[in-house]
Image 1 (cartoon, rainbow, N blue to C red):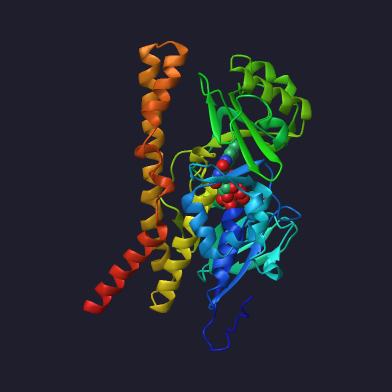
Image 2: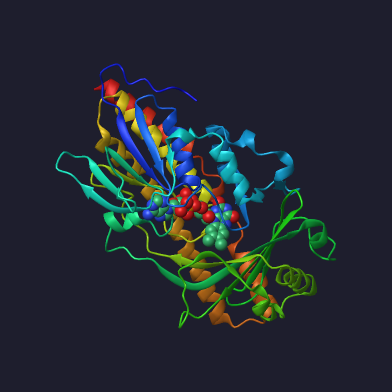
Length: 402
Ligand SMILES: Cc1cc2nc3c(=O)[nH]c(=O)nc-3n(C[C@H](O)[C@H](O)[C@H](O)COP(=O)(O)OP(=O)(O)OC[C@H]3O[C@@H](n4cnc5c(N)ncnc54)[C@H](O)[C@@H]3O)c2cc1C
């Protein structure tokens, strides 16, 4: 780990990263490589951990894991890549572990729940934690997930809400799952009507993920918990309308137990992912999409790349933090606008199909057909490195020409 040397007389940029998910850990790795940054990561849990089955690592995610050095910590046998060579799948906990291995843990503080933020007249931001600990920083990075406290401070009018659907994730024994006739060795979405689907996928090693998503009424239920344990056998009959292999794999998951429930929350797009010339939102905090596109870890790492590169650019050119944050926002906000646009496009197709009143199988076939293609997959191939580097080169060129 590089030892930081601030002895040249210039005050370092003091950064607090809130949250130890993929976004916060990615930020910690990247900031550690900037010699002028003095950073600390604060996580509310008592350890850096992750709930929730598997996670897909799309092309863009994998590239950024190569960039930050965490990819080498993922053993090939702990990772499943389908024969068509599309993205791969692995246990979430292993992704967290691979990232954490690259983090200077002497700068990570756990059991630190952020409860108060204040912008001081000095320009610094004061942050206060539940245990009374306080810190003053130049830059506050909100990497605190979909229910971001930092976001609720910077954009108090922005609200997220339960979107009426919950996901149930279970990891079962891979050889047993794959022994069921008709269960492919590939990541597969088994679709039904009304948003009901089952996702099955090998994860690497002996792990196999079964995730079932279903609409659940909001009334009388507490939809705030994330990754709470759930008795999946109470819901298994809801999947009776699926083909036999799916019914069997659902029954296996229900019998095994260990299912976790995720109530899905989402909110409108933020107009901006920065605030007060000293706050940047990254990851789910910057775009409350509740797992849409199955690439949130990749989006978080893209945010990290854009943020550290714009800060490095501003620092080297003596341009100041506000200039860096404005540029970060200029790069990331349009990207999220485009992603929300894809969701509107999906919703439009859903409405069209509902109006057509097709038989079930035909409706599903049409939904798959109309949503397959570039419109729904460009985000996995988006190259944030090229996009950011090109903008910075352009700006440097403009400065030189002046
Ligand atoms: C059902 C489901 C399936 C998904 N599938 C995929 C997938 O296949 N692939 C993929 O890439 N993404 C997937 N996602 C999305 C992915 O989980 C997220 O996008 C990703 O975890 C975001 O990382 P993050 O670091 O922004 O936030 P998080 O992972 O949510 O991390 C936030 C961290 O901040 C901490 N924190 C929160 N509040 C505070 C506070 N006040 N003080 C201190 N610490 C705090 C939390 O404890 C947590 O550790 C899925 C999501 C869901 C719900």
